[in-house]
Length: 399
Image 1 (cartoon, rainbow, N blue to C red):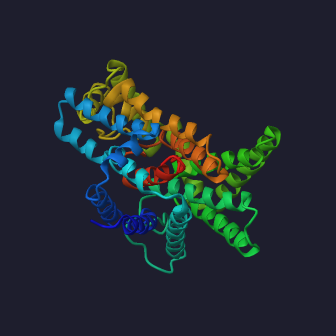
Image 2 (spheres, one colour):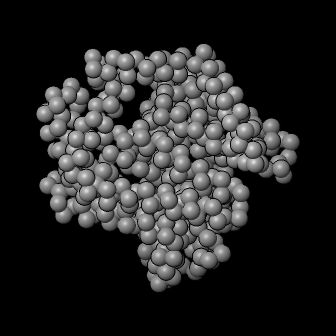
Image 3 (tube, rainbow, N blue to C red):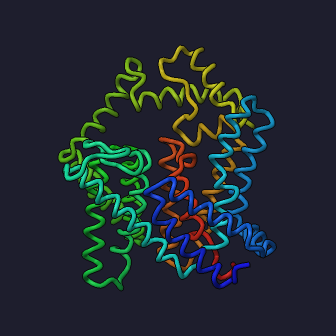
């Protein structure tokens, strides 16, 4: 048995490594996750762990959200796909509660530093590809330089990193001049990086993040907040639209997709419109408990053929809300929203401004971006969500 002091130190080193690897590699992050889980299960003290988990309503909400998916297996026909969904969402049953029991208040600064360092490395590589200093690799291309993950995941995660750095610039009065200038430059360079990559959902999330942090900065004056939002967001949008060809083209393509939806149904935005229409037809016929955890592909194919849609059949509706509603109905949606409810509720009680502000911002940003894709089903965005939530909503005085 490892001594408790050494075990705690080991956990913290692993968590810092995980924070660094999260935005960089699936295999590396998963390896660390497995180590953490194995250590947790074989380290004993189970009564304390269970009591710590059950003392937090967010942990209970997370576990119940997963168990709703398990319950949905009772009326699913496609057991194989149902098991795949359970596999994808196991973070909410095990990893989230496990991380919650081992994170330490004194190490939060190290988790955040490791995460932002990894984003800085990702950003650097992205610029090296964009300037054609190195050749594109993995997911990257010259016009969309996101090497370590697709732009669908990269831009939302980049938004979170920008928020962390901007919060330091705006609210940390103890920063030295060198750190203030360094963080300001980092925030600017990440913002530019946001618009030389193609993740439109992440870019919308970025503008929402700006609005949130502006309201947090002018928290005593709604008038100043509104004026600042109306000045900064359109200005940044205009500069990005005029200076970034990929952002310019992606905005134009989105507008075109909506206008020519019926003629160009396989375009990115048009497909999401079709997904929404077909999904609603499934949902209204199965509103309370859904079609079952594994039956989305089969049910979607039936509706797709009935409506003679020209889009491909779906295993993912690219919308977290319709995905959950189809699989588990209103029961599943209540389970999902309860996670965000308790995140916001717990944040309001935090005495630390940064933890409180980020704790409120994280669920708000995910609630927005999940309209565009199933961001709590993908590896990168789910792991980031779970990892940050494990320490943002923990009462360290109680646990």
